[in-house]
Image 1: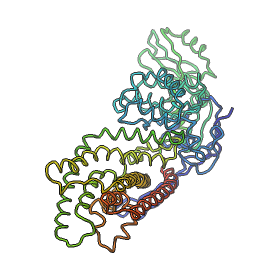
Image 2: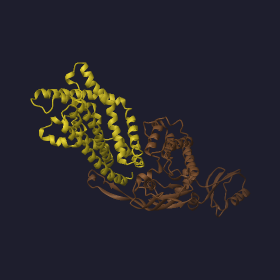
Image 3: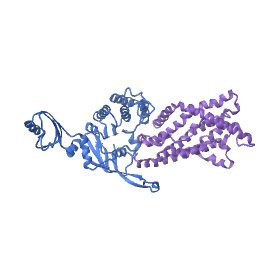
Image 4: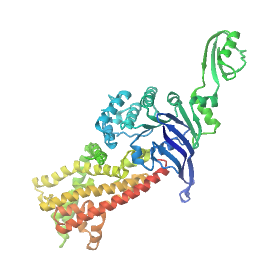
Amino acid sequence: MTQIIVEDLTKEFRVAERREGATGFLRRRSRFVHALQSVSFSLREGELLGLIGPNGAGKSTTIKILCGILEPTSGRCEVGGVVPWKERIRHVARIGAVFGQRTQLWWDLPVADSFVLLRDIYRVAPEDYRRNLDELVALLDLERLLTTPVRQLSLGQRMRCEIAASMLHGPRVLFLDEPTIGLDAVAKLAVRNFVRTLNRDRGVTVILTTHDMHDVEALAERVIVIGNGRILADGTLTALRRDVLGERRLRVQFAEDVSDLDVPGAKIRQRSGRSVELSFDPRETPAHGLIATIAARYDVEDVHVDEPPIDEVVAQFYARHALEAR
Amino acid sequence: MTAAIRPYVAVVRARFSVLLQYRAAAVAGFLTQCWWGGIKVMVLTAFFAASSSTPMTLPQAIDYVWLGQALFTMLPWSGDPDVARMVRTGDVAYERLRPLDTYAFWYSRAVARRTANPTLRAIPMLLTAGVLFRLIGWSAYALRAPSGVEAALLFAASIALVIGLSAAVSALMDTLTVATLSERGVTLLIGPLIIVFSGSLVPLPLFPDWSQPILRNQPFAGLMDTPFRIYSGHLAGRNALLALARQVVWIVALVMIGRALMARVMTRLQTQGG
């Protein structure tokens, strides 16, 4: 069932400009910035969508409109049959959201006190609250954090609590705006595992924005790339990879000196001593044939086939669309 | 407690308990207020000694001063730094994410702010000015008991209205803070007005006669002047009831203005990208 519909969504901001110099304030002008231009997509219940793009691309604006915090300039948008900004109160009661760079927990209070306040704000029934809390505490390993004042938590601990805070009222849709920003490897894995469980086992619909492509690789079956306020790609990560940088990489460790190395169908990317990295197009040169050719001609110790790192794929995509941070 | 008001009550309670943690500030504030109260009492005593006819008696004026010192933090004389911080950091987005009427939400926060601090400070101040002063022989400068049972009851009602009015002014200031992105301008503009026109600086009855009708009908009189004059019997009977009615009218008016402004500001907030 379609849960989120976005059609022709457009958002303009008026930005005040000030000229340079001492009299600049006398000549104030403003210009319009198109944060979103005709963005359209839809999402089924239980889908997990990764929203990526450079800074200023329009990711957060999209999330904020979907959350009912911003009103678009034009276009249509429905989440579970509700227009977010028109019925804000009804809408926000049914969604959860985490903004990675902000905090919703009370700085001076123990985590549990913030949770109790959120319970009352969302009017959660006591038995539902108990059940949700127990589940979240188990999944996110919060047991020892609950009595700690928020200001004493590490960023990773705080983010786990923030995510729990957004799920206490049991929403069926979760918006995560850069939930892994600034986190260490362990905390990132904890967040990813939790989001995966929520999505796969509980069927919660998730929209996630991130700059960490490993988040997307680990979680999202579907990715939307957004740049300069427009959708540039919408599909699986595999398809994006194929379209942008479909090559594969073959690392070979030779047992002999290979300064005269020449392999048809592959290019030398890097070499250091007897270790060489080749790139090839798997559609023209299948990997097994390539390896056989090399092994027949040279003395090979080890081979390793890999795809280009996802960061490289995305960087190449951004470069192709001349995207940079605004 | 019905489901409708449960979140707002929870906000008041949580905020209240946080604010009660600032005990060191309360002690410092208490000492400052003793000092200021002492100066004001001395100035008023000298002033009353030199005047032949005065609009209120000296003991009434002294009651007015000590009550003002005790309940000083009920005055909405500065914007909420938390709101300013939320606006600067963008955490204000989370406020809009709550299934609450944002105005009522912030009004609740203001109610907590305008009751928690006075709770901490009023009791030591009242004990000092009302009991300690008598014990050490400063009865002439001490706070007296309410002028009667009726005065005490009306005073209690009026203080309840002070909380409502003060929270309405606070919520309006918070909304202006969002509009101007800083609480400083709001505090600079409104703070001094409130300190003068509530009677906190000089009791309002001591202002010139021609200004009395204006002072009586402006909103800030309901923040201090009204309950304090009721307490000492300076306002009684029909006049006291009329003064309470004026407090109610100003609460309604300021809530309406605050709500209208917030509706506008929240659409403007959107143009800044949250």
